[in-house]
Amino acid sequence: MSVDILVKGGVLPDGTRADIAITGDRIAAVEPGITAEAGEVIDATAKLVSVPFVDPHFHLDSTLSYGLPRINASGTLLEGIRLWGELKPMLTVEAVVERALKYCRIAAGKGLLAIRSHVDVCDDRLVGVEALLEVRETVKPWLDLQLVAFPQDGWFRDPSAVHNVVRALDMGVDVIGGIPHFERTMAEGAASVRAICELAAERGLMVDLHCDESDDPMSRHIETLAAETVRCGLQGRVAGSHLTSMHSMDNYYVAKLLPLIAEAQVAAIPNPLINITLQGRMDSYPKRRGMTRVPELLAAGVRVGFGQDCVMDPWYALGTGDMLDVAHMGLHVAQMTSPDAMRQCYELVTTGPAAIMGLSDYGLRPGALASLVVLDAADPIEAIRRRPERLAVISKGRVVARTRPAETNLSLPRA
Ligand SMILES: [Zn+2]
Image (tube, rainbow, N blue to C red; front, side, top):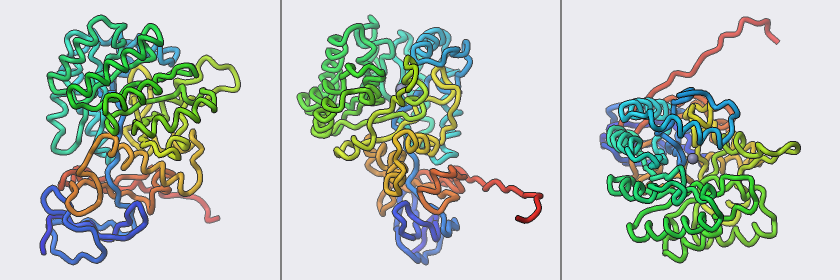
């Protein structure tokens, strides 16, 4: 047998040692001691060889725009939304394409090979939609980009939002978004959830809402989302992003809510870096963390994926494109510190979000797409601890990035 690429001696995330043979864009074999001749051999001896990272919640239309047209002085969610409203009329397709492509290249270098990006449709020019559809095509050979039509200014609150969501879907956007907690009233929020789920059922599409991104324990749109998912037969195709209000809800109510979410197979997408910085802003002390109840959702059987949400945009001045930063923060905020829970945090930036996005060819198994990452770490826990170099990134059968580990030479007396 001869293969194109042979990754030798690696350790898979579950701890088993195996070589991985790649032919064309597919994995041909995953087993110990493969002796096939290979066009290229990658020595991964004792290194973690992992499925690629997946970001289920991002905003590619605003990324890398930090400081345009000004900086978010308060650092709050609402000033971020206002600031984005100032920047939107100034956007051009060329500038959005350039920034988004720059970010996708950074992501690939970190082994992040699939991204679900919301794209704001509350701009009659649909500049973001046009730009990101172009970017989706450009990066297709090496990065899977899924787009969500996101009415940032409200499904009902913005007069042209509904029309523009439909236009965006007709242009080829994949998923329907929404923001029920931002509508004028709770009732209009619930009505928007109903309308969005009906549209998704009619078009056979997935749904991913910015849902209850608030510290208000009475923000309960996730309950409506679960019920509408069942009513419209959308089980397994719907996600609630953020769900931060659940952090502040009454325990008795959450005990009823979690089984409803599980029954509807609605996925949860917390965004740890953003939730810990944007939530709890009106608290004095103690300050709430604001991230949703991750261990409890997992224990209830709900599919969970950690998202990154923002990198250098009106809402967040930081961010690196490294999903291990996201896992690291998520682990801390959710206090998922047992060995099993730490390994689970690695899954929340790989297999968890891949399942939410419906990436059916994803995985380290024969027949799957040949996309993987070799990390300079022994296992997933060390990877989260050190967030080390991605020694090699392979996407769809092609090596797309290599990084040499940094080397520190100490000039210190021996201890
Ligand atoms: Zn978002």
